[in-house]
Image 1 (cartoon, helix red, strand yellow):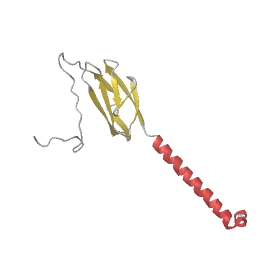
Image 2 (cartoon, rainbow, N blue to C red; image 1 turned 120 degrees about the vertical axis):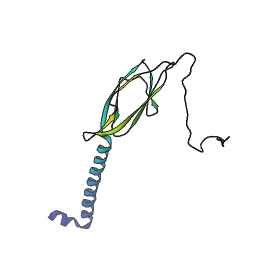
Image 3 (cartoon, helix red, strand yellow; image 1 turned 180 degrees about the vertical axis):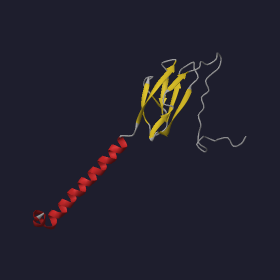
Image 4 (cartoon, rainbow, N blue to C red; image 1 turned 90 degrees about the horizontal axis):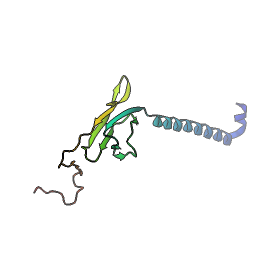
Length: 139
């Protein structure tokens, strides 16, 4: 303690800055740990026919996985597509179960249905009002 008094005003300022830096470093570290440690959940996938193209939250996956490790603190969409079959959309929703965030359903078992001969799979693209060119003015 006597040594701090001998440092004078400049020494106390440096000691205060060091303490502030240490506190800020600890807070930033805690924030990074909290954000980086979101609860994860393993979701088994059983999709046939395999392989199918799989999209996770609108992003295509490179392969047709047998399981996915997903953040359980937010909802996810899975879209399954294969030529000659009807595409399927599965929504995984976050629910609190036994005090923990969990995705529901906790596994995906899906059998893609073949398209009937002479039919096509319908794809629909939606635009927010005012985004399209010209739009339909009621007629």
